[in-house]
Length: 169
Image (cartoon, rainbow, N blue to C red):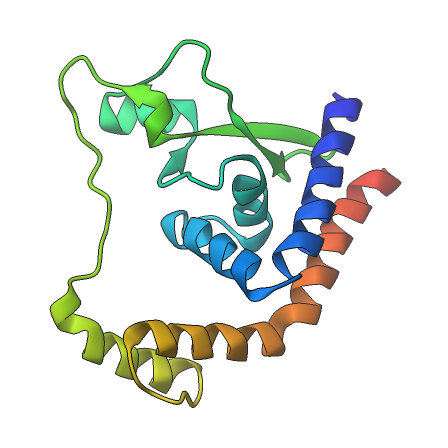
């Protein structure tokens, strides 16, 4: 298990360097993160590194119990760090595309309605700082830049502390 954990740690470190290299990489990361918004930054980074096309990830029990869906045979899980134990370990999630339902149970994927773009843009500007305005995409870009500047060092330090804490154990 230690080897797999170290491999995933390496993937995380490489992905952090990659997503911050240029705007295209950052935008691609944000697409994956937006689809998997319930996960924290570290988990979103690992999801993006292993399955950038993931739209809705959950553990196997969640798919079985909440949605009546089953993970396809041979599907590869997305490894995430599991901080619930006192030792380093991994847990696995699966994208909705890795699941099926004998009963036709669909998974509702949240999407914003275009008619609310102006209200969403205004709310984002009010909550996250001044933006240049314009389209919702431009406002989201400005907000992301504001947040990245405000939080970049904290995110990287937190991630390194979490990962480093397990290495020291």
